[in-house]
Image (cartoon, rainbow, N blue to C red):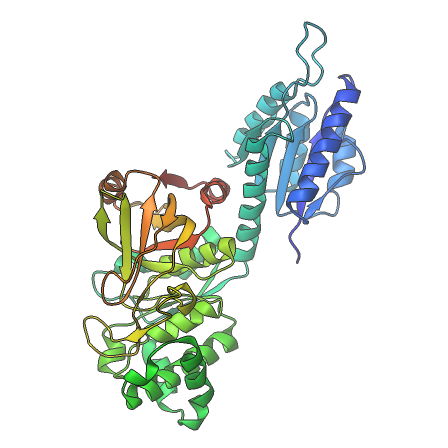
Length: 445
C-alpha cells in the first residue's frame, strides 16, 4: 500500500476562528509541499465527532496532530483508540500578543495531548513548536515524514543472513523474531556453502553476462587471474539469482575464511555490485550493519559506504573508515575509477581497491545495541574529503562536525560496534525522528 500521512488539525470553535483558519490553510500548504502522501480534512476538525468522521476508514503511517486551538484530551484519546503508529505533535505559535484575547491557546492543547500520549502506554512521539513558515518547523516535519516512510518500507524488507558471523563478531548476529517484532523486518538464513555449491554448479557460459557486467563496472579486472575472474562471475550469478528469487532487499554475508578456503575467490566484489544494484550488502555477516546500510540507502537514494573506523587526524578533524574491498563501484573517485585489487590479508582477488569520492555533506550511522539488548542509534555528520585510497581495500575520510578525537574516544567508551555506514547527505534530523518512532536512544556526536 502507498504511504499515507494524515494532517489532523483539531480545535474548538470558541477561540478566534479567523486566526485558526489562517493557520490551517498555511499548514496545509506547507504539508502539501513537503510530501505527496499527506491526506487532509475538508475543514478544521472542531469536534470529536468531526475527528471520528475524518479518521474512519483510514490506516495512516504517520499522523501530524496539530492544535489549531486548545482541544481537550478527548481528541488525542480518540486518535490513539484507533491508531498506534508514529505521531508528530505540532504546536502553533500564538499569532498576536497585544494584551487582548488569547486567540489560539495551541500550547495548552499540546500539553493535554502529550499527557494523553504518555498515559496510553507512554507512546513515543515527536514534537515541534512554531508557525508553518519557520525553518525549524519545516525541517522537523520533513524529517518526520521521511522517517515514517522508512519505517513503513522496513515492514516489507526481507533481509538475508548468508552464513553466520566469525568467532568474535557476534555483535552482528540477530534473531528472526527480534528483527520482526522490533523493526518489522523478515530475516531469513542461508548457509554460505549453499551459495558456494550453487556457484560451483554453473558453467562459464551461464555466468558470461555477470562477468561482462563486472568488466563494465570496474577497472583492471584483467589483472585478476582467469580462474578467479570466472569464479567471481559464478558467485555473482549465485548471489544475484538468490536475491531475485527470494525478494531480498538487504543482505549480510559471511566472507572469510569460507570464500577463500572453500571456494578460492572472495565475495567482496560480488557485494560491491549488489550495493550498486540497490541491495544493501554488508560483509562479515553483520545483520545490523546491513540494516544500517539499508536505512542509509533509503534516505540518500544511493549506495552507502560500510566499514571500520581505523584512523583519525586531529589536524584536519577527520576519521578514516576502511574495509577490505566491498564498497559499491559508484562510490569510487572519478580519477581512478573502481579499481580492482586483492584482499589485503589473503592476497586473492578480485576485491575492490579504491578511495571514495568527496561529497560536501555526509552522515555516519549505525543501528547499535545496548548490553541489555535494547537498540540505539549512532549519528554523526560531516563532510567526505577529497582523499586518495588510504590503505589496501576501500576507504573514505570524513571530516566530522564534532571534534574527531572526542567522537572516537566517546563512542569507544559507549561501546559501539566497529562497523559504521557513511551516506551522502545530512540526515541526522530524520534519523532522530526514526529513533523517536521506535523509542530508541540516540547517541549523537
